[in-house]
Length: 360
Image (cartoon, rainbow, N blue to C red; front, side, top):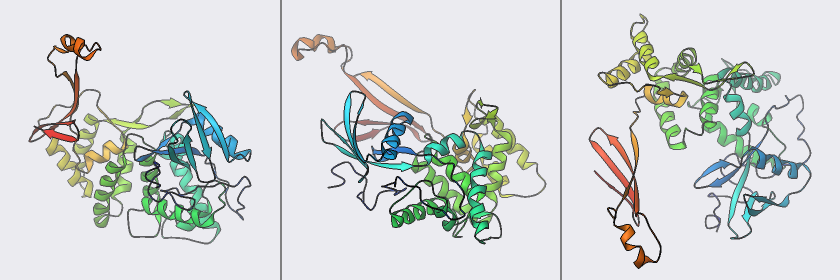
């Protein structure tokens, strides 16, 4: 029934995909000796198989209603009236009765933090680590535990069991090793990818799988890759004197790979650089092609970009206008669209016609 209503698997009063925070109290959750969280919340909706932000203005209104103690209310958005129920975290469209799941998430605030570069994310890491220090939990290096993440989780939650499950899932998504701690490199990696709308979940899962293999041989490889990216990338813009999201050109990356090979001390990145240069040998580098953090990891870890085209053509070969009198409506053309991907073995065309199809 939940899936038929458009809810994610397992959605209900007690469970939903992470974060599983479904009901917030109007009174602050007390934290003895804890650190005040600087997160604010974004409201996300489960739509088209993934969580999507409702946007800052709609989130602000929903949060205002919640803070005023209104857990059931109606809102008009883009000409449609929706009924919100914050008891079971759902939004119902008045005209169709379609119900979709909602959740509160700190991602909105972390997006603004991560947009200002790695240093701001480091500060959030240090703040959460300080919770462990206050409670006498130390590791060989500064790291975040489940306990500290639970203690410093943003917001006020009535259901403590729900909060515990939420933090457990987030923590498992952060750690790339079997160690029960998240180091700074893993923290930065998680939040940069989690807050980047251009890094879909399947891509992140593949990147993480490749990184996990490398970390078994060299536990510091992710930290050095991040440092390499941060030192060579440039801000895409500036806000209040602070550099925004970092990016680098592919040409710059290839130059970095040449420099790595000239390094006298062997590091695992040298093998990665050698493979990158081998893949791009003799290929033209597109002008203006820039790499964000996930693009940088894609290239370094062996994932290759492919050119993708959207084809649109008239399957009537210009004859649609002559058939309009039969159909009763004027059609200048009968458009067919397809996605074409360039692969080493040739181009593949993907299209929909009663189902998914592909052809060379």
